[in-house]
Image 1 (cartoon, rainbow, N blue to C red):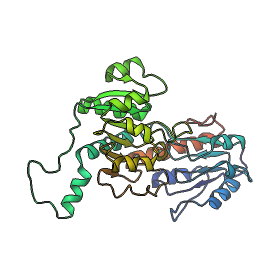
Image 2: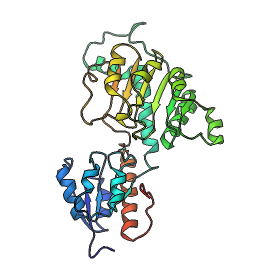
Image 3: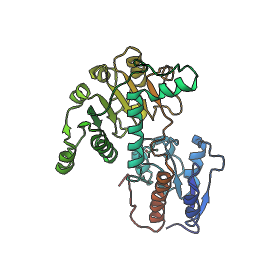
Image 4: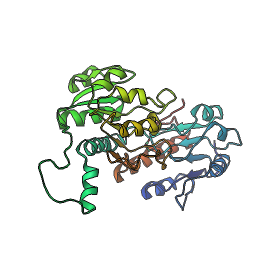
Length: 324
Ligand code: DGY
């Protein structure tokens, strides 16, 4: 049990409504500048706070858990937790929670946005109009690829993958193939007419490949030069999961050489840095990791993290444990 008022550190600004409610749970330390925490800031937070609430911008490798630790809970603001060394946290007696479920729809919407933008060249089109170089309609101007009726390959059929597949299948008449550790429930597979494939076959058959698997040592560079070379030349790659699932240097090369037609990316291996050469490619759509970035979803993520903090402080089981 914690003696006195628990100290809770939020490493970034959160939606105001959640910060206000969090302040009812203890002595909350806010990051007024909203600048990312340094390694030293995180070290101090772990040594002095009962609860630390990090985000994807906070790297928490094993070394950070070797010093003095007062923290009993890392309540991550986000579903992905590849920035936290979970084994080291567990070893140090630190529980970790995340925010699954509440960002499914918002992230799937951004995957759909990227798919449509990449296929229909809308980023290029918008730049064209804004730059004043548009000279008017003509039959052969800015031709792109129709999406309706094409094949979508979903890699990682968790909540977001399924939701995106539903949007694509029911909204755009897309055929769904998928690659996932476990098969879909029969009812969902039937609803989507979805076929489970080995990754190589999916890459060869899909017109659009969308990544929805977690970032783990096994999925690091899952999409490398070899995988890209399996895709048809007209194919597009969409990534709203994590940057290091893709070998970005290989992707830049594949786009330059016309190995695939385009890509839509919301996530990058070393955010906010981009791989050299990526930004210069017209056939790639680049968004700033905004998959979950709606007012509704960011509040829901904050409230979900808050529920985990409240449970921890009341000595109840966490609603969303990561390391138990
Ligand atoms: C998530 O929840 O994992 C988002 O990518 C933000 O971290």
